[in-house]
Length: 104
Image (cartoon, rainbow, N blue to C red; front, side):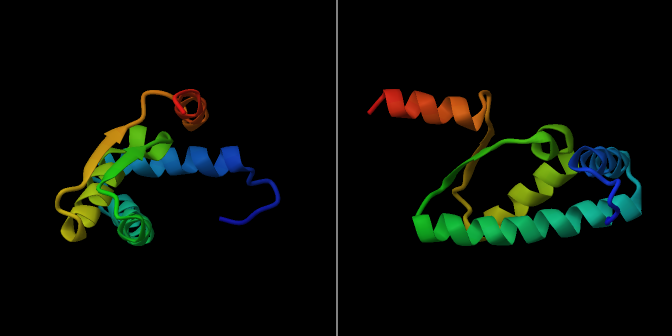
């Protein structure tokens, strides 16, 4: 979507609608969500393999609010990293960084 009026908030709201429609079985929306989740998983997979990690914390509205995206993303990653452990973050990444720094 490109339009000078299409702010980040407008695009995010549109994404939320697509995610909701996908979760409710709309095939066109599900195709969009599936394609994007697999593409994102491909990028993340490379980073996890390079870092030799099998744990991933998920954060953001698409993971929290779109079951179809989250399940497709996790499934795509587990094809290459079967032992992968994922969880939704319960605190913001910034709070986690502060907590981790305090534990050093």
